[in-house]
Structure formats: C-alpha cells, structure tokens
Image (cartoon, rainbow over all chains, first blue to last red):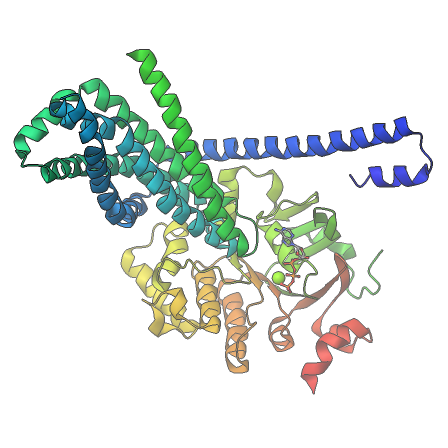
Length: 282
Length: 263
Ligand SMILES: Nc1ncnc2c1ncn2[C@@H]1O[C@H](COP(=O)(O)OP(=O)(O)OP(=O)(O)O)[C@@H](O)[C@H]1O
Ligand SMILES: [Mg+2]
C-alpha cells in the first residue's frame, strides 16, 4: 500500500484508464495481503496442530495436569449440562406428544425422543455449551498466560509449553465431552419420562425399555464417535486462540471470544460432516 | 551512526573469545516497520556483571529475549556459551536454556500455582536428580534469601507487587544458572529491599561464578553490581565503560541517569 502512494503523487494528471489501472492494482494488492494473511493463519494453525500432535506422543506426559483439567472440564459444565439435559427431554416430549396423539402413535413417543436426543440433541447441545464454557475458559486462561509472559517463562525453563499446557487440555476435552454427552443423554431421557408423566402416570421401566428398543447400535456408535471430535476441536481451538493472543490485556478477551465463535462453528460443521458420513455408511 | 563516545573499546574481543559467554554481533530486530535494535554488538564476559541502561522502549528487554530466543532477530548472530542460538534445534536449545536464568520484567509468576510450586516448576525440570527433600530445602533457602520465607504456600495473587518481583527472582536463581539475565530486578522495590536484592545478585555471582546481564534504571543497583556498563540508544550501543567512566562522563544523557539520585 505504502509503496503505491508516491507513484500516484509523481504523475499528477493521469488519464482515466491509468487511474483505474492503479486503483485496480491497489485493490489487487489489498486482496493479496488479505489472502496472504489468511494463508499465514492457516499455516500457523496447521503448524500448531502438528506441534500438538507431536507433543502428545512425547515420553513424559503431564498426567497430573491432565487429571486437573478433566476435573475442571467436568466441574465447570456439570450444573449447566444437568439442567439443559433434563429440559431438552422434557420439552421434546411435551411438544411431540400432541402431534403423535393425533396419529394415535403416542406409544412411539419414548423411542422418538430417545433417538433424537442420542443422535443429535444431546451431542450438539452439550458440545455447544462446552464450546461456550470450556473453549472460552481455555482461551482466556492461556491468553492471559501469554500476555503476562508466563508461557515465555515456561519456555525459558526448558519446558515445552505445548506439551505442558495444550496437550493435557486438548486430551481432557476430548475425553470428557463424550462422557458429558452420555450424561446429558441419560438426563434427557429421564426428563422425557418426567414429561410423559405429566399426562397420566407412565411406568419408568416400561418407558425406558420402549425408549431403548428404538435405539440401535448404529444410532449410538456414530453419535459417540463424533463427540470425541467435538471435544478435540473445542480444546484445540481454545488453546490455539489463547496461545496466539497478541500483546496487551484486551487480546485476552478477544481470544476468549474468538474461541467460542470458532469452536461453536466447528462443532456444527463436524456434525454436518458426521451426519453425511453416517448416512453414507447406512 | 556509530556510537558517539566509546571508552572501553571491544577491539580485542576476538582474542578474548574463550572468556566470552555471550557474543552478539550486528544484531538487528524490528517489529513491523519500526526498528528496535540495529547493528548491536555486545559481549558478556565470564563472571562479570554487565549493567545495561537505556531509556524506556530502547529495546533492552528485546535484547535479552533474543539471547534466549524468545524473539528471533532479523539478522545478526548470537553466540551463547559457544553455540549459535538461532541455529540450535529444539532439544539443544532446551539444554542451553537450562543454563540461563531469566528474570522477566513483569515477573511472570505462574498464577495458577503457589509460590512453592512456582519454584518447584523449573527445579523439577532442570535439576532432575534432586530428591523431594533436597528440593524443599533448596526452595526454603532461596525464599529466605529474598525474604519471603512465609509465603511458601501463598498464591501469587496474594502477594504485593514487590513481593511478586522477589518471588520471581527466587524462581530464577533457584536452579543456579551459569548465566543470569535480570530484567529490572529492583524496580518497584523500596530502597532497603533494593539494596538487599543488589547484594543478593552479587552473592549469587560470587557463589556460583555466574555471568549476568542486569537491566536496570536503578542507579544504586547499578552502582552496587556493575563491573561494566552499557548504554543503549537508538538501537545501538551509545556508551560502554566502567561505572567510574559513566559517572564522570560529561554526556548529558548519561548524566540525566546519574544526577537525580546523587543529590
Ligand atoms: N513482541 C513485540 N511485538 C511488537 N513490538 C514489540 C514487541 N516487544 C517489544 N516491542 C517494541 O519494542 C520496543 C522496545 O521494547 P522493550 O520492551 O525492549 O523496551 P525496554 O527497553 O525494555 O523498555 P522498558 O525500560 O520500559 O522496559 C518498544 O517500542 C516495544 O513497543
Ligand atoms: Mg523492558
């Protein structure tokens, strides 16, 4: 941009065509710079990913830090996921009931609700909550460590900060989010039973057996597999955004915010891909 | 632009090379379009305390960050203990860093850990063969040296600014590094504690034969510790010499550093 400025000044009266040509080249430069920045970011995220993968296979794994992170991930999200799980089951049941009643198919209710919770609602809603809670937490924590030079301090005491900070966090998220999803699924079905109970008493054992008779292995399996990817994506994005935070305290907030946005988007995209793949396989 | 005054010229530096622990040649680094250091050459000799002076923003912190490769220079070479820092692979760099203590200007204490864990962190990784008991003793001794014995199990957020500074100094010296890089060790401390820190720096130097670079604005600290001094200006060495030569320098910039405290 700067190099174009003086050229313009040197030739004061330019024919229209030339002016346009300059304008065009300015635009091209602007676009190229934008594209360059984009590719630089892609390269950076790629590099960070491979560093993380490499560090995951290093001999000395920070087991204590990993356990601490697992505890934090669970502890931070459990109340929210408990409430959300129950409410989803409850709401789905209450809303689906009249429709099914119209067709005289109320007996299908438990199975239908269980299916939609296990295949879609449980995983996606839990992952989005975790993207908000855990992604932003990791982004803010690592971002503030970056800004206050704690990550640099680790590096100069010969500790690979990716191995110490990123690997345990990504692994904890990858492991814990599937567990949280299963927990949310269970509560969702419980909530659904409670919802069914509002209109007349429903036997719990009967309800559960009806619910699970509709759910097959090929419903549960892909749904669980994709949650590992949700977890990995949330942990990785949170760490990446924190790690690459700029200087100054405002970049901490930015890192936290961007973690949530990107992680949520990734969750949705992974879900889309997972659905396509499952569809192809079945 | 060459430096205006040069008292102790490093002309004979080539012959002294075995004694040089840090050798920086023609270091150039900038951020965006703004050059911070240009063509800077500095040596640190064995067992000496080199004090670096310079106005805020003159690139002092950037300089010592280049030495441990937290920043990569645009050009120039940095040799530490005979190894070219920018050519090292990750493992060798980690090994070299174990021999260097780095006190961050901001302290950079890990704020999710207690003071004890903060000191344990480098100790565990750098002195791998210490038993837990030896480590505890070492930590207690170091904390006592900086006057923080009673903060062992406190979190950094519970300490005052000056206490944090001292805690992070303790974390730096606990591993007995061969080379110490102090970024403003006494800033924000009261005169009494400052004096204690200055003498601690000297003690560490004598006890472990360390070579140190001390960045400071605190002339009393410089007086107490300096074997040699360097003034940075415009990304170059503006003046190099002994404490005496600095104090007697007629240069206005130098005097502005020394005068106010004298009176
Ligand atoms: N990582 C970085 N990115 C961009 N600019 C930087 C970076 N680090 C330092 N700078 C810039 O380099 C210049 C020198 O900074 P430096 O921290 O070395 O100053 P200093 O001499 O240590 O000052 P002070 O005495 O205030 O600590 C400043 O203008 C600063 O803005
Ligand atoms: Mg500084």
